[in-house]
Length: 132
Image (cartoon, rainbow, N blue to C red; front, side):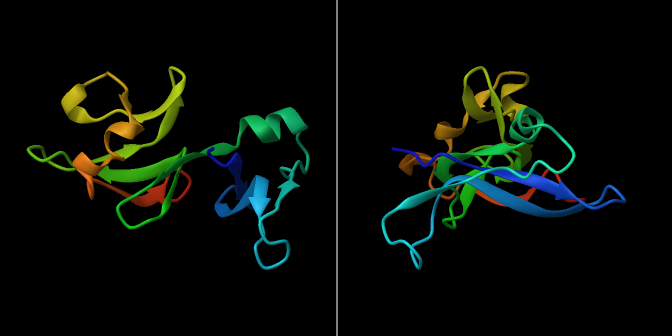
């Protein structure tokens, strides 16, 4: 079963991205081996619903280097006979996916690139909150 966990972008007073707050059912192996602990989102001056709505969910997948892929990540994707493209991971149409140039406006399921056939085709290179 896929872990249920999220990340929440935290911005400073000037509106610049500062860091992520991770929440959900998180494992702290050094403190409680094999047990997940619930950590809630930071609410600050917003409602719980807004904090949850602004959070991004872990997809349950990893890139070619073993890094977790989370909604909002910028990924570099390549197919065997196509150029590489930079795309953002989104949750739409009931699934995690990416909009790649060679499929125009069609959402391509993230699972397409996270399988043995396309091994090494997807790599996390940043996220939508960081500049650049």
